[in-house]
Amino acid sequence: MKLTAKLALAQIEKSKSRTLWTMLGILLCVAMVTAICGFAASGMATFNEVTEGREKEQVRLIMITLASVFGGIVALASVIVVSNAFRASAGERTNQFGLLKSTGATKKQIAATVMYEGLFFSAIGIPIGVLLGVLIQYTGLSIANGLLGYVNNFLEGGDLVLRFTLSPVAIAAAAVASFATVMLSAWLPARRAARIPAIDAIRRTGDVKLKRKSVKTSRLVQLLFRVEGTLAAKSLRRSRRNFRATVVSITISIVMMLAAASLHIHMTKLTDTVMEGINATAAMTYSPTSAEPFRTLSPEDAERMTGQLRAYGGASVFGLGADSSYQTNIDGKRYDMQLIAVERVHYEELCREAGVTAGSVLLYNEWRVFDEGKYIITTPFGRLAGRTLTASPADINGAAREYTIAGVLDEVPNEILSALAVERLYLIVPDIGTPQYVWYVLAEDAADFLLYAESAGNEFRASLGLGEKALSYINYQTQEQVSMRITNLVTVFVNGFVGLLILIGLTNVISTVSTNVRLRKREFAMLQSVGMTRGGLSRMLTLESILCSVRALLFGLPLGIFAAWLVYTGVIQGDYRFPFTVPWLAIAECVLGVFAVTFVSMRFAASRLRKQNTVETIRAEDGV
Image 1 (cartoon, rainbow, N blue to C red):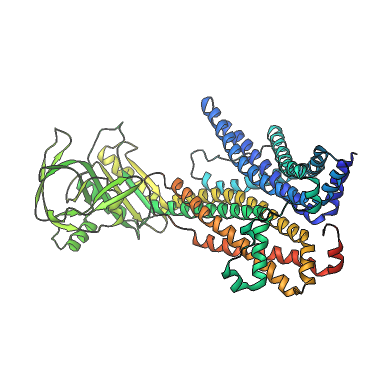
Image 2: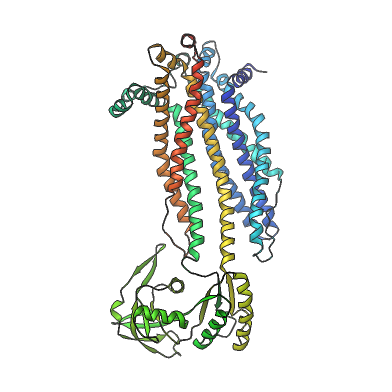
């Protein structure tokens, strides 16, 4: 074995704590890359059975793209984390590198000692990480199929099952990508270690960069935290490289956690928004297809069907129809008009709210415009009360109608809002036929009600001579459950991905803090020799952890909220809109978690200082 390889192996055996955390970080990185490649292979195998030709190629491209994007995110996080571990290892041996250079070692040999560490870690970590990744893939697919089991009951065919596929190509790709990531992570600090001049390495001046500003400390810090706070602030200023990876890891963890929380919040809101405010568990819709003869549903027929649905025990029915094929002229300006028909019981309630007698025409005072992803709503028509408007049909063969507005409504039930088209004048008119009609029904057992509704609907269709597809039925209870299962499926995968990334970041935080404290043993011993007590030393390290946490939060929270907003903009694509919700609970968890992790890591590392002998530590050559 080469001398450089023996030195690398000796360093791995010597620094057991750092070795453990570095290996854990590599295992998690390899496992994630393997799981991502495995999920992509399983996705291609699953959808290859239900697609063909061009669609099959599109699915393959989508899966490869997703695997590349998520794998790239993992690789980036891995390079930051693993590279920092190797940088810490190189930092521990700075004095050793200086001595080797002074005795004739070349830059290539110095770099090789760090690169051999990467090889040794890869030889052990990659095979175990691949096995762990396959286990994650199997567990994830099992959870997904468990959630899809309920959804399949309501899908046509009901056979959507994600296949567990052990693809040699995917495993090989994951292993190669992981090896490249680990070696790149080792190469970055190896190159830097090779460039440090021998005299600087022996003096250990490479990691500490002092500038004029570095020795200045805020008066507020001095006032609040005294000597310990001043030393903690100076330590962070002069050893920024030692804390930069910690801040970056915590920042990435915060961003990913807030993005995942935003996804769960807004996907749940999307599910709720679809039926927001509509008090119904089922619905029946009259909407003849284009293949059938066009037929307006008369008010008598609509009322007859409403009565039949109400005959189901305990059912509450809200029926309404809409016709948007009219226009009118108001003070020389042309407006599109939407006529709305409401079944008798709720129509009479609206008349009472407007203070007019039943049989009157009501105006809903709202003008809706959908612009740049949101509804802009104004109320410009209150002045029309008492006026007579002429409704001209878009069909030139239709007859114009005149409507005198008896009352104005500022609010209407959400069932009516669900039927409104944008940029229309809305009139609620009695005794009109409409080309479309919906019966919203509140029944305790939606499935049982729909069996009754289909039976009544078949008789209704037969009496009117309607086609089989003229009536359709919706089970909102089932839709909500299916939507929640799909939401849970997505969030389980996203949270699992984010959780593993956070674990990778935490290994970096703990490893960095432990190594930093270990490298500063000589500094701490000198502080104790001039009178600093163990309590003062403990306060200094605690303040360092607080300052490091604050810095990470200052970067992470704004970026995390921005990431949460980006997730929100992706979720609200479509007609269903709702305001952005800041994930306050997740933010609070991030703040508490960051302080807890840095504090516990620092205290754990500091606990080892209690066993050191001050004199022996100061006399040590490298303080390690």
